Every structure is written in structure tokens, then in C-alpha cells.
Image (cartoon, rainbow, N blue to C red):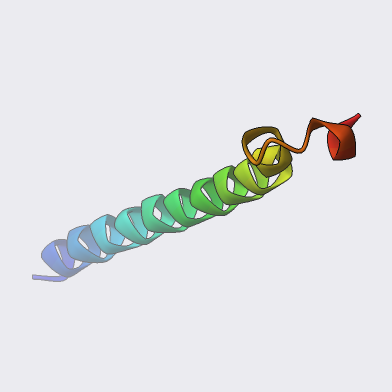
Length: 48
């Protein structure tokens, strides 16, 4: 019984870690795309 609870808890923690990693990756990607936005807005002068 205890072993089963431990396994579920470990799995739960692992899933939470993965979700947190995904969130940070999404945030990084959002920051990256935000910094590249001027390229796509046709405002090359601002970037240069």
C-alpha cells in the first residue's frame, strides 16, 4: 500500500516537473519571438 502511494507520488512529481519545464520553455519561446517581432513587422530600421 505504502509503496503504491510512493509510486503515485513520484509519478505526480515527475509530471509536475515536466509541466513546469514546458511552461518555462513556452515563456522562453515567447520572449524569443517577442524579440524577433520587429523583423516580421517590416520595421528593419528599428532592429538595425
